[in-house]
Amino acid sequence: MQWASVLLLAGLCSLSWAQYDDDPHWWFHYLRSQQSTYYDPYEPYPYEPYEPYPYGVEEGPAYAYGSPPPPPEPRDCPQECDCPPNFPTAMYCDNRNLKYLPFVPSRMKYVYFQNNQISSIQEGVFDNATGLLWIALHGNQITSDRVGRKVFSKLRHLERLYLDHNNLTRMPGPLPRSLRELHLDHNQIARVPNNALEGLENLTALYLQHNEIQEVGSAMRGLRSLILLDLSYNHLRRVPDGLPSALEQLYLEHNNVYSVPDSYFRGSPKLLYVRLSHNSLTNNGLASNTFNSSSILELDLSYNQLQKIPPVNTNLENLYLQGNRINEFSISSFCTVVDVINFSKLQVLRLDGNEIQRNAMPEDAPLCLRQASLIEI
Image (cartoon, rainbow, N blue to C red; front, side):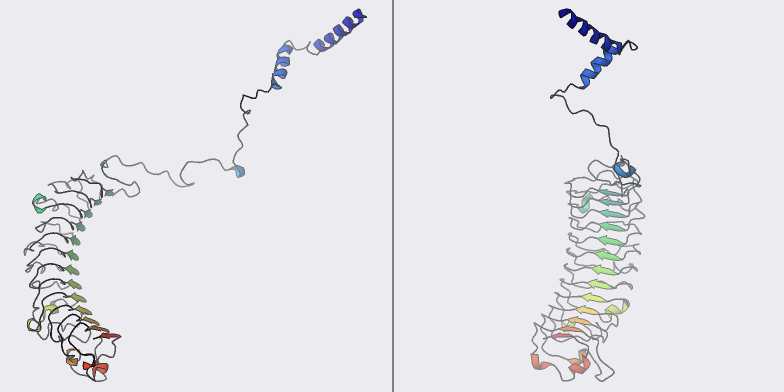
């Protein structure tokens, strides 16, 4: 019986080995088959093949499909500033607590240095970037004694210069003829010499409000392109000698002006807005034709010392006279002739804060002021 068992076992082994008689490496196949069924709980999951994104779309770069990659950042930008690649001609150095002006690359056209602690503009600082169009230096601590004499003269394309909210006591200059806007407000400038704005025939806007200017003289005469002049909040006792012919907006409120010459505004046929509130104007300092200009649409004479309504042109639309000492409502100040054809185009009339009684309006006032939508007494 034992011999029968041995013979049976030998026969089975012979049969198994016979399966690999043709393959001398059968033992490796056997080991591989045994290994594939082994599971180790401490091994990670087997690697799964990468499944491509559906619809055949392959992964692309980080930027949007079809758009070029972003341009590299320029290397000539000062480390104190930002030069955005999508705006390669602008340099932003504002609000950095800077005490000096950094190097300006030649490609720059717009530079922003506002709201820092810069106290000087050294000579030649912009010589490398003569193509500048805008320079923003407002909100610093710049003094006149520390501004280079010719620091702006070589900038032949400069259009806007912001020097407001500094400590300037004099007008800067010489300035390039290309200048269109000059912001010098909120400084300590005391006077404007006659030659301070010489050659600025392209200047359209001049901001000199909130200074200590006592005299302007004839400095505005040569500004043939000037549209806006702001001299409010100063110490002027006289209006400027002669206004530019292209002027449209004149702001002289909060000064000490006590008189305006006869026919003063006739030299500016395009003048639309005049503000002379909070001054020292009296009727003795005004001629009968001072405000008889057909172009003026808005006239502000509030908070002065007027006792009578000054004559105005019938084309005037808004007249502000509140806060004076006016004690009578004279219709002749608006209409020299009162009838169906002749009337004033006045729409707003402020007379509150005066000495006029509410029942003092003449009977022909509704006919003269037929287009008025607001009359306050």
